Amino acid sequence: MQDGHRAEAGRFVGFGVSWLLTMLLFAWGGLALDRRIGTTPALLILGILVGFAGGFCALYLRAVAEPADKRPGKGKTLRRSREES
Image (cartoon, rainbow, N blue to C red; front, side, top):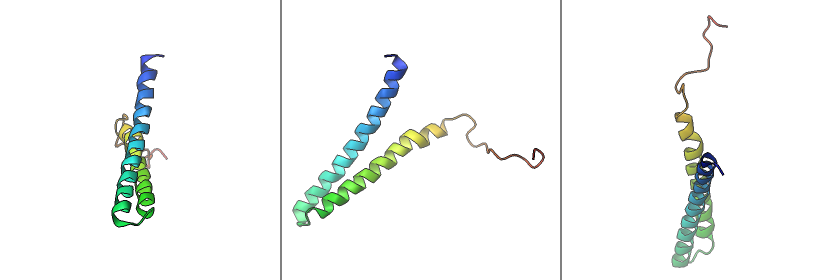
């Protein structure tokens, strides 16, 4: 395996691990609150959903939004001027 492929694979594995850890953390928090309050399984389910959404947002920001900021020509519009049309 080439070093570039390894780095790319490691990057995507990191995305998956961070998403999984976010979901597990929120699920654990929901379970702990359920046990304390006695609302089983409402807060566990809410924790899983919030963890899923939070993990997805983090994944989107790291995988899509940040690389888009690093592309050349950032800030330039794709509109043509009136003279070109």
